[in-house]
Length: 217
Image (tube, helix red, strand yellow):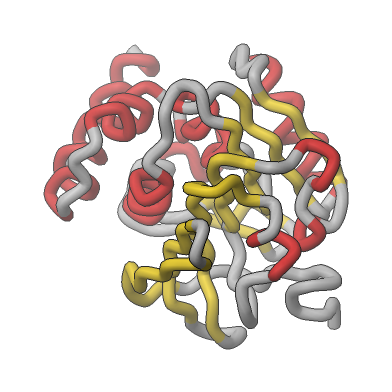
């Protein structure tokens, strides 16, 4: 009965929060229907996991609102052969969505406790196309670059040039850029003649901490 309940809540989430706001990529919608979001939050918050809001996951971090996860994922325009870099593993939920859509996901988490918990859960759920490490994500992952897509799940003062350089020609990056309190969600596409940028609208994320982000206070 519990499995049926959460499946029903996922379906409602997709219809009322995601499809209703214009997300149309069928692969993104299917990934959101399939992935058990409630397992990526604490037990006390599981009944709220499919609500239209972010939730705390500890260490002053959050699991993003479902619509934001879907919007960012759709903007990446992933194909089955893509290699994706994710900055900010967090709970591992966004990682799981990416793993449903791409060939391989390289994900970096700065906070060791979150890294260990997410890695364990992703392994338990069978996401064997995920490679994870605990490090400063703002440096990217040079040894595995270039990437077809990069997703940054924390707000940066500007898009780190280190990350832009790790995109393939034709690669896409989605990143929140702004001040500590509010950002614009930007889609950046790398072309032969430079970077083409699209503003996807306002958002609010926790700070991207690292050498090429905000400094730790």
